[in-house]
Image 1: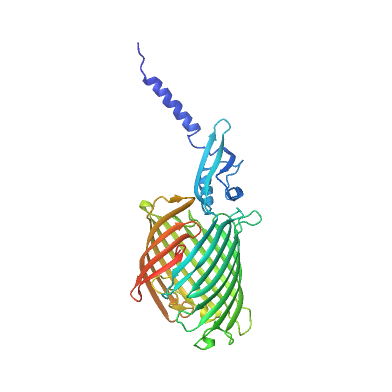
Image 2: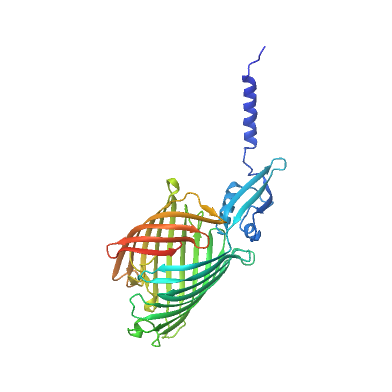
Length: 422
């Protein structure tokens, strides 16, 4: 005689319900991290990953913390692929975490060929290393010729004394013609920047800088270009900044926001040197849309007060401001601007070839801004533009872009640049 099957089914259901109540599948929030391993490292020290993560052996496990750790490792931009796996051990109530990575190339030599906003050409070469010594240090060297002559070098140490305290040194020399062609100026700049991170999202910065500008072959009165009658301005200064970044991926964010402000005081004293203060502030917000699209909004403003040289004015036009005009249009001593971008991925999955990952995206944007001759009052001029652009996501350059912007004043203008507009 066969017995009914439903009593056994009920007992099984009750047992599973009790088990799920006591220890849900995949819920290890009360467990500890037993071990952490890094696989796939060839030229990178495991310290680069270990210093980015907070889920270390002995720490209580958390899904949210694991996700934040993985995002922090991605934001180093050192790895083309990252796979994080968690292996639970119910007997010891512990988990083992494994980071499996594929390293990006360390060195890149590349040519430079870029049309300028004055319809000329810049050509040259560059050499980059984004993982110097296998510790995530960065070295950038560039030389540019053509419409201007420029040399620059950047060295950055991402961690100091075992803490997230980036330190960088940037030096450059540039010989370029002014936007209107009235004179040439030779500038030498050096900047030392140090940042202290309170956590992954908040940081403050300190940036002493030095600059020298000499005017040559001018066809205007010297006092219209520099402060010194000798056509030479030398000044130093100190910048203070603060930033909070809650975006998910810093190179190409899809959600979160960035808010920051900086205050720079410059001058060496004396009547022959520029002296003043520049204040800049901005905020960006990113909202994910359907089909992996992202809507981004940026608002920014700035002003400069004190004794100032003409070349220190604010400019709305350019490849990363109001993209409807040329770079040196609409100068003033204060400005406010805004940009709206709709970012769409053209390649949902990146293409991998010999540890090089490439991606492609498109943006539609609208820019607008106002520049004042004085500090947010007096005569003003507004400008706006709209257009489309392409974004190439690749190692080293991170984001290379080209934008075609249109405005009633200038028609269609092509802008080339590196990095997002915001």
